[in-house]
Image (cartoon, rainbow, N blue to C red; front, side, top):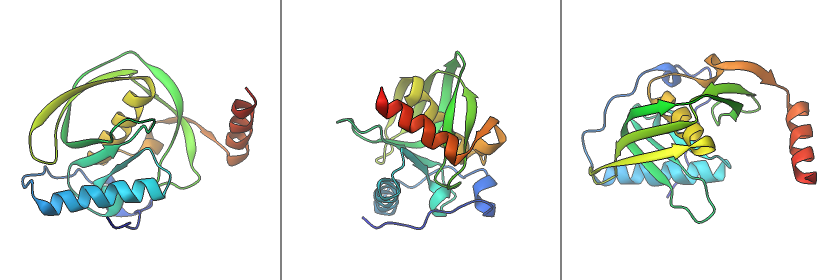
Length: 165
C-alpha cells in the first residue's frame, strides 16, 4: 500500500462527476488499498477516489472500533430519511469545518472490489460519512452544504469540552 497525495480544493477534479468503475481488477484493488492507506495516514474517516486524483466512482469509509472498512464502488442511494445537522470536515479542505444537514438514515447499494453487489443500511454518523463520500463521486463538495462554518478555535473548544465529559 502506498500513500498518495490528497487533492485539495480548488483542484478542478473535485467538482467533476466521476465515471463508473467497469473493470474489477488488480489496478482497482491497488487503488483501494492506496486510498485506505492515505485516509489512515491523514487521520480521516472516509476518502473518495477524486481526492487522490482518480475520477472513478469508488470510496471508502472506516469507523474503526473493530469494524471492517466499507468499500463502496459505484454506490447508489436507495433510500434516505430523517434530518440531522452536525459538524463535518474534509481531507480536501484542511482546517475547514462546518455544520451540514443530512438524512440520518441511508440505505445504499454498491459493489465490492470483486464486482459483487451488496446493500448496506446506516444511521447517524455512519450515514453522514457515507453520504459525504458519495457526494464526492458526484462532484458535490460539503462546503456547498455548510449552514455555519466553525473556526479552529471553536472546534478546539468543543473537543476540549468533549474530552472533559
